[in-house]
Image (cartoon, rainbow, N blue to C red; front, side):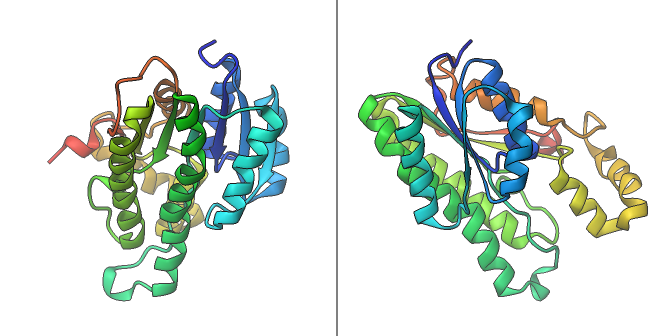
Length: 255
């Protein structure tokens, strides 16, 4: 029970990697705040997560809503020990010459500003208590290029940079801040991306072709990412700080 007595906030918690991580945290004793824009999906997640939790419907691109979620966590659950900054969007797939500025703004608002707001409002509590951990969701798009996703790649590279910066500033207070770089993990977002490429009838074949170049020849699973995130949030990883850790079957290492 690595998280017995601990409180962790997870954004983008109603589905995918956020939901899988919340489930894992609760199994290991945590009390959790689940934050998501989709209030109905949050309610549906309640029964699958279990345990003592707080549900907050909020838009992470709105700083006031993020501040309120953190304040509500501390007020209702008594403390905060960790944050998984998971909420993110992919945005529209287009080549650079066709990319719309409105799409860029939307992706940056969620993927970059949302991460900053989470850290900004959680870190004062972690600094004051002299302990805690933050895990930010970067992506393999934060360590290499991904075709036709200029805004997504830009935002995730920025998350990697912000993670390093915050780690340098707050390590002295006993706080660790790291990022993860998931590759092709089979979530609703990946499925939606494949449907954009190949349509409803062809996405599974497109997916098989996509992972054929992966050293492990498969998609990753949300539970595998949850294992890494909970390790980084736990007190078993106190000297890992400022790292961006790929979890992609080794694909980012291939030429």
